[in-house]
Image (cartoon, rainbow, N blue to C red; front, side, top):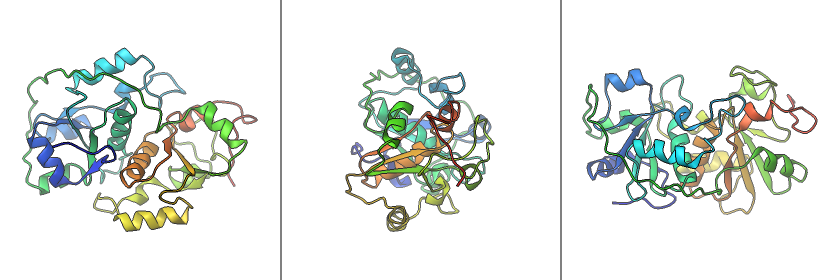
Length: 282
């Protein structure tokens, strides 16, 4: 059983079938949560393992392709084997980490990666058992990195587009307080990119951690001017490209094209001077 190129999110039933068929399992919940119970053979990882360590570039993926390739192989990832990513969307500190890993894998050339709608709770409800001890050592994968630029944008390219923002929509996926100037996560300057529309990424979710229905999401996006099948470009950012990567993953899975995550996001943008990299609170 394989995933289609746009199938970046799956329900628990499909995820269970893929797991039972031998899919690689990535668990992005905390180490403590993983120890208290996880799907057998699930590797516990976090997005920081694959990202740069030095501020203000912590949201950007590691530049060394060989290092990234090796890190992913250590998790058992191979190009021809589906990857199922499991998160905990009802946790108060959920930042869309499962969407970030899926976005990363597709950006690095893996065409069969998806996260589970509803996270681990959905899998348990679908009949999957949990284990509370360490899984056996994972067999290394043979993933070969082939970077795809369809779903990301650099700081320089975003800056250039602001000079002529026609046919462009920019979405700020952070909390309302961040959009209006708060800097709770170490940004050097507060505010939002001029012209950016606010849409907090958790507004895509129901209280139980499942995504809203397709119709509900389409309606919310239409209110922002994002139309399916349009030629416009949609760029989404947050603090370090985590919440925005989740947002991009949802849009791609719903068939929206020309959507990009800005992985540098506010950590990188706010570090530069305001004249060329402006922010506003209005």
